[in-house]
Length: 437
Image 1 (cartoon, rainbow, N blue to C red):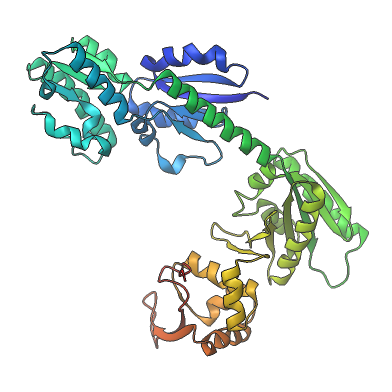
Image 2: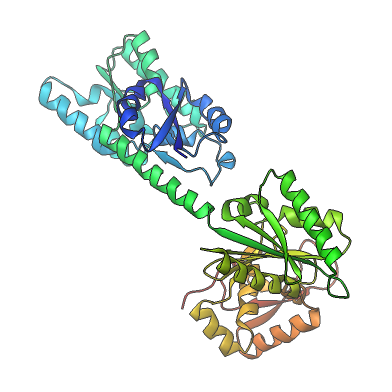
C-alpha cells in the first residue's frame, strides 16, 4: 500500500510540492493541508492524524504551534528546516546585486525567534515591537505587525520572512519582501527521509507477536474452560475490529497477532486492554504473556517466557518479552517495570557482588526510576517484586550487608507518627537513575 503523507504548509510553498509530486508518486501520495495562519495547524494535524502515515511541515515554528500532548509517536513528523545558510545566501545575493543596500534597514522576522540567528540582530538598528511574549501565536502576530508598521513608517527598505502565510498580508500593504524557503533538494531529501522512516515502522509493525493466556485455577484447565477463554478472546478481538485468531495449545490459549496490533491492544506496551476485558468476564486471576519475534516460532518462545513472569506475579497481569529479551510488565499502568532476561553486564556484576538475583535487581532499579527516587521501603520492594515484605527485607538486608545501601528515616506525604524506614540505594542517583562507574 502506498505511503500517504500529509503536507502541512502555507499556500506559498505549494509550488515546491507540486513540482516534485509526479516524481514522488511511485513512493508516496501527498495530501495537501494548507494553512492561512498558525492557529489552524493543531486542528489540521488532529483532523488528519488517522488518515496519513506521516506529516511534512513547512518550518519549525509551524511545528511548534502543534500541542505536544496531542502528538502521536506512531505517526512521524519531519520538518523543512529554516537554517541560517538560506538567510545568509540570500543576503549575499542582495549585497552582490544591490550595492546601495543598507542591511540595518532590513527586517528579518525569524532572527528574533530562532536562537541561531541572534548574532544577526546586532546589525539591525530599526525599532520594532519587542517579540517577548511566551505565547507563540502572539509572537508570530507581532512579527507580522512589525513588517507592516516598520514599512509604513519608512523605517525599513525590505522585509525578509520565513513565514509563507505572511505573504498575502505583506502584498496587501505593499511591503517589499523576500520569502526565504528551503531548496527543492532539501524538500526532496526531507520527503525521502520520512518515507524511509515510515517504511521501517511498517515493517516493524508486521513482525510476529504471540500472547499466551491462562487463568489461575486449582486444577489444570479442562477443555471446556480453555474453550470458554478462547471464546472471550475472540469476542475481545471483534470488539477491537481485529481479524487475529486464538487457538488452544498445550494447556493455554494462544493469540497470534502482529506487533502493530499488540501495540494497539496494550496502549504501546503500557496498559493491556485484553487483560482488563478478561478481568471483567472472569472471576479467576488472568495471566498473559506476550512475545515478539521475527517469526512465530521465536514469538511463541518469548510468549511462554513472558507467561512465566506473569505466573510469578501475585495478581492478574500481562508481561511482554521482545526479541532482545527485554521484559516489560506488569502492563497495568503507564509506569511499567522493565528489565532484560539477558541483562546488562554491569548490573549482572553488581547483582553478583551483592548476592541477589540479577532480575530482581533490575526490577528494583526500574521501580526506583519510575518513582524518581533512590530511597525505597520494604513495601516498595515487595510491590515491585511481587513478594511478601519479609522476602523484600531479606533482599534489602543482603544489599545492606554489601554496603550498597544506607538506612534513612523520613516522613512522606505529610504522614503522622514516626518517620518510616527507607533504604537509600547507593548505586542510584537521587532521581533513581543508575550511576555510571
